[in-house]
Image 1 (spheres, rainbow, N blue to C red):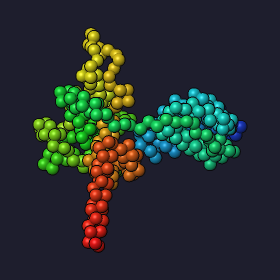
Image 2: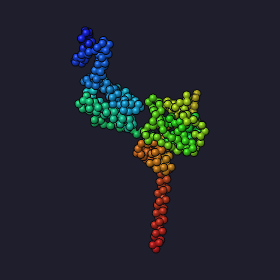
Image 3: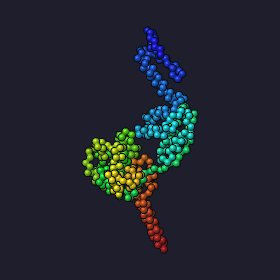
Image 4: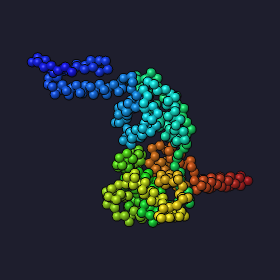
Length: 377
């Protein structure tokens, strides 16, 4: 380091970074120190992107900050980080960006075989974005994520509850502390996260309506907007549910489903509620209890989760003959194709209703034909 000071010359320092010399000048020693430090930090940050030895992990971190941090919601950003930490960094994080081959990425995708189709598609899309942006920035000559083969996936769609499950769920909900929470999802189709945002002002007792205006954000456990703009909606309450809500005596900003401090439910709070309800359900369905522990074999199916209640609401709409375009609005779906996927799982009631309508139509047609024939004679 060479520092010089004279009446005509400012403070000055020269240094070399990656083979290139830099000459920094300043009017005071303090200013010089600050300018040198700022220049070195800027060069070091820039080298993360531009030097040939950049690893996948360093590029991914820069990519997340530059392209995703301020363009997606916190929960989505958190999901991206999880994909990198769980699936990408352990396999190729240490490799130089220029050394990554299609086979490396194919191994990552192959490792997801058996996962849900949605999970695999999101991983594939993440790899595509990461390396296409590296290509656009001229960090690599080819995009190794261009022609990846998708492995076999399983469909993890939620299901409706069975008639037997409905019988026991409603019986337990009649006495359990979380019974109203369960029935709100079953009778009104709210997403679990939407129930956490409900306050007294959202319950219209006069018109028997629940106003859905917010949702719990998984990352941070804060109340924010609904999943999509379509999620903001009004849902009618059946009379059996309306009577229970009338007994609550809620103030406008009281949370309907409170935690111990009177605040909104968190993700952990919902899991605790469900585990408690599931335990009571197992007992009601015949499981033995020894030393306060429910004993296997358990009677509640592994794939029975709170979201199944929302799915059931949708199939109930179909059974009741509610048109699919109306069901879309009540479910808060962005696209009617999402509603259609649930409607394709037709219920026996809907099937029988369709048969009755067809029979009635055919009967009317046949009667009209007989009448016309008799007139012609």
